[in-house]
Length: 192
Image (tube, rainbow, N blue to C red):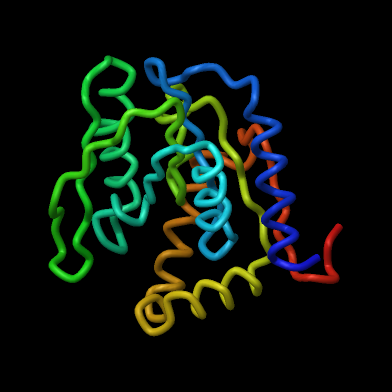
């Protein structure tokens, strides 16, 4: 199955599954797209957000650096999801990876949906604010090859470091086990 066919099929599955989802953060329906680095979650989330005409927040923009996964989850909770639930404006801060600190604010536009993608989007503390968690599953070798092709020299020295954060996070949070939809993303010719 080609990447384009996989994406079209995966988007259709998510949209069909999401059709009867109820609001989860005030009047908004929040969809979390989770999976390990390089699994295809960013591609899937972008296509789903476009079809839903929804704003998209990337957890990569919220992490406080390579060791900031937990801080990114807190930022999403405190600055976006809790305010939406309470009927207040939601504004997230972008982490400036080069400068090593949070930078400018980004208001979350009004919409029926909000899509959040990245490791941490399906954290236990966030699940009450989401109408569902989509997990994207991919083999490790494929994920690594894709992530390093995408981010190259920037990511390569941090692959193992980030993988340890993912391992600890997923062992504690059980995101895959609590996902409401699992999408397989495998190499062409290796589909189950």
